[in-house]
Image 1 (cartoon, helix red, strand yellow):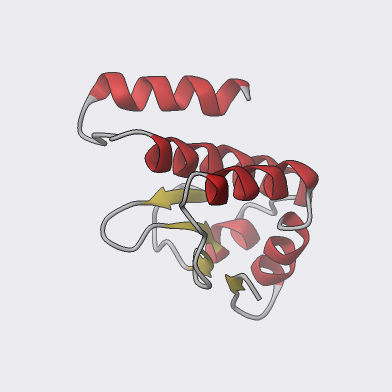
Image 2 (image 1 turned 120 degrees about the vertical axis):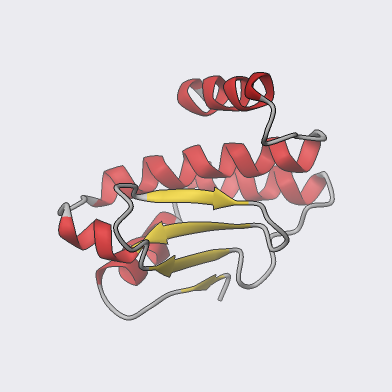
Amino acid sequence: TSATCDDGTCGEMLAKGLSVPRVKELRESMEKLGCVTPKRFFACRPCENESIIAGFVYDGENKVVLCSDNIEKFNIKQEHVDRTLIHELIHAYDHCRAEMDWKNCLHIACSEIRAANL
């Protein structure tokens, strides 16, 4: 499988989200650029007191993380998880195609605008 999932809601939603056509398209586009999504590129894990649903983590081991505790806590629906996966994959795509400086506000703003609109 292409994801690491904990048992339960997050893992099930992640598995369903990975079959969404736009998610597949973004992953294929990254692979064409040479950024193959490794086996553990997607993960569910607790985010411990952060009020977020997911994030693209780029420090060393790039991955998209879904916050298993908050998905259950905030009763997040599958459609939200699907949109979130797409949003975070756009950040991952930007990281792959460009020399993103995630400390540069202009780089972050550009990626956020793209993720919000694509």
